[in-house]
Amino acid sequence: MKRLLCLIIATVAAAICARADVRVLSIGISSYPQESGWNSINGCNDADLVTSSFPNAVVLKDSAATHRGISDALRRLLQRSAMAGDTVIVHFSGHGQQIVINHSENEPDGLDEAIVPYDAMKRKSASYSGVNHLTDNDFGKIIDSLRAKVGSAGLVIAVIDACHSDSMDKNPGEGKEVYRGTYEIFGAENLTDNELNDLKRTYHNQDHSPISRSPEMGNVVYLSACRSDQRNYEIIAHGKGYGSLTYYFCKAYEVSGLTDMGEFLSAVYSGMEKDKTLRFHGQRPVFRNTLGWEAPEREANRPVVFQPQPSDTAPYPAIAIITAGIIAVILMILWTTKKRKR
Image (cartoon, rainbow, N blue to C red; front, side, top):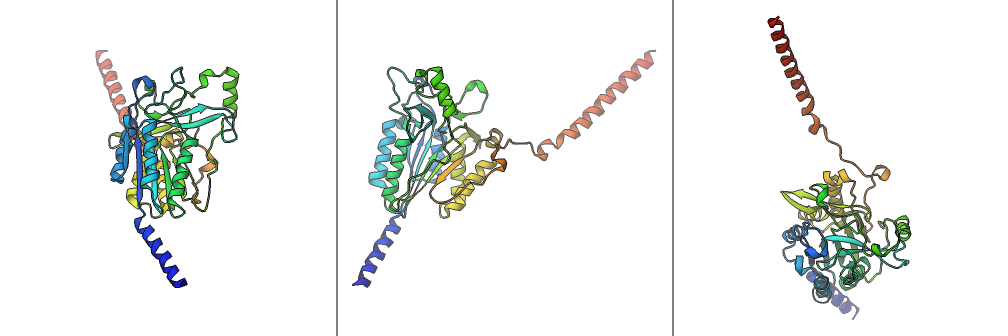
């Protein structure tokens, strides 16, 4: 009887493993409605990149990526698609913003981080109170539900290529660089100067926010393109703008897949750390997870500013010598001409 029971358990386990798959939901927003106040970015390019790596991904772009559209897609993923043992990837590329909330233990700085669906407005008004923003608390609950659905043998990866801070805006007046989000805190216009100053004094980085754990839940990896107090700069690759996190995520997947998560996360992190645009701005990705993986520390934990390499500066001494030679010849000709006139 015991042998039969073990055989049944082994058969069920094998069946579950055989059905295990990678389920992907990719959300990319490039062009928000003009009346929303949000500027255009390249979130749809990111969704295309994800599709090239995961052809079976469910994709929402621009007007399909409303608050309801995203919520419905997440619900279908939870109720119909995700199975025990699966790896589930939820990817979002768009704007991000902070929202003023009442003080709570979960948000001691009085601010909630949120991703910005297609129909979320940049500013609070009489007609919009923030209902279409998808806060990190609500998003976290969905991720935990997915973790429970895939079980202890599964894995959930949240890829957020939209900084959860108040400093990620694409401002056309600041040059060609594109970065996501906004300096404006949603709801801050209703605060007094003293209340706003209090928010700034209590603001804190949430790199080490705790993650819920349970033996019945799958592991989780939260990948954020940058710290909560940093801008999320886009990069240029093959003539197109991409979110840096999405680009290096897909690049690492094409090379190593998800078989060894330690190797995969290290590859994504290393790609972003070495990127010249991110190094120039001191942007640092944040990977929170239950796998025990830790990012390497930079020296003195300071932002690294990109310095030109020798190959970038090597031509300049030669140019200087040639220029000096040309100037000397011109001066010699002028001196000789002047002497002959005398």
